[in-house]
Length: 101
Image (cartoon, rainbow, N blue to C red; front, side, top):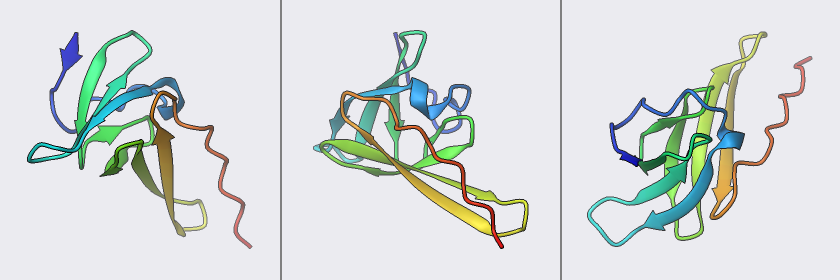
């Protein structure tokens, strides 16, 4: 089953549980195909939300996509965390942000 409900529809799973299976760069807008843990395929476009930390798809290339998570750390500092998900793999584990001094 392919789900193309648009931005905001894939925030329920951790990034590390989704697998990138393909990208399409030839059309009017780049797209990526992700398989979630239930086996459902989802089409992602730039700006789509994905992951439990409300990451946004900020780049789609031939071999990977980039999901950028932005959040405010406990000390008020804005943390911007770009995560590259390579083709055929899930996102790498995200290291926690080091504490600010």
